Length: 224
Image (cartoon, rainbow, N blue to C red):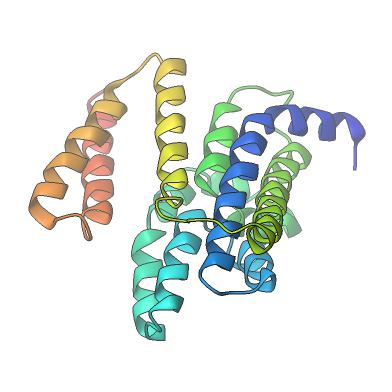
């Protein structure tokens, strides 16, 4: 592993580090306050590694939800990653043996970072992209472990703690809005979300709003 590439990847992932450590801690606290062991935090962060789904999983496990229910909800909650992947198909085809892990580790924050590197030749190499994905997952796992340990020692009222994930999504959107010259996709996303929320309600609006947003952006790009 090239130390120069590691330094570059680490610097790039510092904002994610600050977010994932505290979000991971929130998840770890939620795990133990729901009566599960530290092992659950470690294994879910290592093998599932899907922030919003991990928070939802705690509720499913606590309510003894069926495996089918969990699988269906997992598909809908994480369906947005299919759209992320479409824009990285060509880039990831050159990753060789690293490709399966890169697909597995594609979170919202990792996707945002990788997209921000487009056109920057000094950063667009396989080693840096891999290290970005790996470091981000390490931050998440460590945060979860810290939260689990702290939560098992100090009693916590975990009410509302899962809102930490929503707060991170909001901060990412605001940051991308500030750094982008083209705000059209931002407004399309908001409008699509509102329309689909009204039509499909809160539990079902995510996937339709993503599909609508993508269709509008495809039509717009063809016109341009």
